[in-house]
Length: 112
Length: 114
Image 1: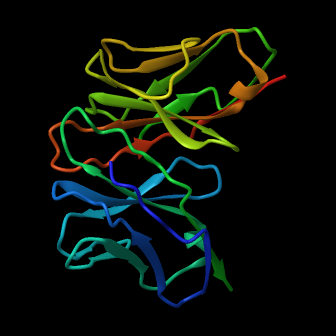
Image 2 (image 1 turned 45 degrees about the vertical axis):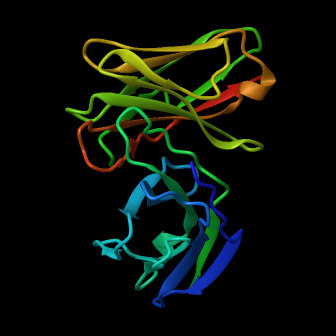
Image 3 (image 1 turned 120 degrees about the vertical axis):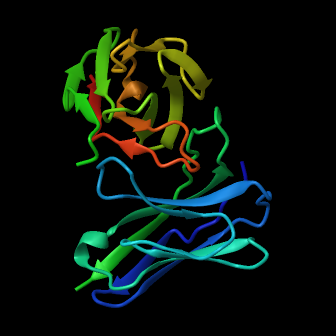
């Protein structure tokens, strides 16, 4: 699985967009980018995933660069409940290889 | 609420003992995963079961074992417990056949070994 690099921590003002970067320069053509978050010792929560196109759902947007070597998770209007550790994970979407390999993630703090 | 349940929520035991953690996946999910989260190791994949059979193994110690029953619930057995086994243990489940790999995590079991 490709390795990812994320900043250790970030702050964002409440109500502003939170932009969380992730570098995955060794990503392979069949590997997806997944984002999960973990709010204070709760179970991790799926946010969004993508292959090469930008994706948006009710929680967030995912922007993947054209060369797929990096991506950005965007929380459009951050709230205090978005304070969490955000994990960027890169792996193939193959049957039989579905384990998630978590790195250290980015600790996002939303400032009131 | 993810739909995945884990019991117990908290478990305190002594070194050398054996414990069993239980997980009920979301209705219809055939795959169950176990993860361990400790302060020094972060979130680590332990083992995956699919429809009753072991599918993948990660950094799971020989003292640990798991199984998935016909009703799809899973149990993680930890034996000869050591202080270093103190951690949060998460179970997750997913629907097979999906084109992507969204896993739904339970609330976890916090194990404290004294």
